Length: 360
Image (cartoon, rainbow, N blue to C red; front, side, top):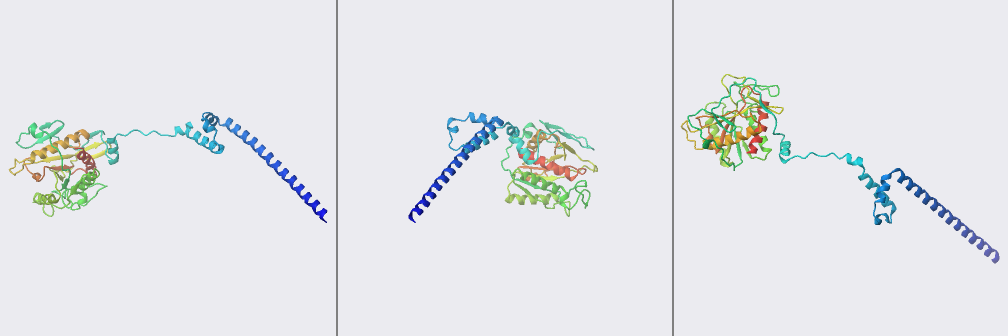
């Protein structure tokens, strides 16, 4: 019984040794063939993609002795992809843009465009004084000397007040802005009047972070007479809480019976209504110590306008009347377009006017 058990145990041990040797030989044989296959695979890849082989040859000794060949190989692949000429061709160069061009682009207002007066039904332009590139129609008996005209002013208070003595002045009705008139080129719907143009100027100025107070009160309704008295009270009340040097009374021009008169300038592809300064003096007998400062401001602004958008402004009109301009250091009347212009032409003018104001 004992001998039989020992014999069987020896047989089992022999069997296990044979099986272990067989498994070991299978594992080594498999490892050998895998190694040969990887070698042939690497040779094949180097032959098919020469760039990888070239990069591998240029690697440092430290890189080629990496202990992790898989990581090294993957890193080589990534490097090859980054330096392939095709990838370089996909890079599109960006044209350099100057700060001024960037600003113009951001605000949607370009400078350096072709500008020309394209009024279809013109009225002869007249002036009798000129300061550099600024034309002036002087309707007073005051001699406008170079000292009076030289715009040697510095604008420190950048607050702007916009108001409308004649709030209901309107334009030629158009398909884009049709309206029902409540008088001859007048309407109480202020969206379609010079007041709406003032709202657009306010919006454009605020794009340049210029503080603006825009008053939209009726001053010529229900009664036209007394408009200037009422608008002066409005301005004086605003100044109590909002000190400002620049005060703009925005109007629409009216040329007698010429309802078709539409002074227009083309700036690039835009059609814009022309603008005109009407500047008061003390010749009418009313106290007006600021009138020369007012005029200097108008000349300073129009100089810049002629530089950027020649023809946007008509000649400055200097008159004997005061027109409430004694209320501010740089107060003025600006007449935007005339009865023949459309509202859209006047709204277009405001983006260019705001650009000019920001420049000075």
